[in-house]
Length: 222
Image (tube, rainbow, N blue to C red; front, side):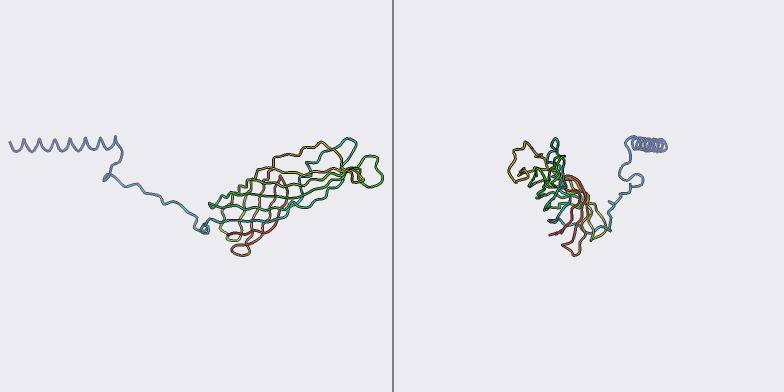
């Protein structure tokens, strides 16, 4: 009787163990069974400086003034060499992460283009077109993380509106009625870098297209 009871209990235990193992295979690993999976610690570049949100201000002067393209061409006239003042640039943006900031880019400049008739031999323009422009743009800057604390490369994308004042005068300075509608859309894309001479100030240089091709000036960080 005791041998029969022992044999029965042993058979039940072996059956339960086999069933439990089969369930473990079907259900996957459970707590207490098999090796524990290793947790990978998030990889962080220890070379990058500690990030702190900042307010960035840039003041610059750019060249050439691409607003000259907004002046029209005229039949039987050709353009002379344009002259410009500016564009002056001012940008303020809030850098809320290591790689991104948002702000406002403002540009102001004026450009003048002389027009000459093909039969002109006097050297004085037959007509002169002038544009004075203010542009206000939403400024999105993508900063490229680098280990250096003194160099900060970036990509700029800005879009907004133009406000224009235009005049056309003949060779004697008399106003001319010219039908010309410059673009309302203002934009600028650029690739640049800031070079910090101190912790909070330095220089920047940028190349791009839209309102200007080259821009350089002072940069501040607060």
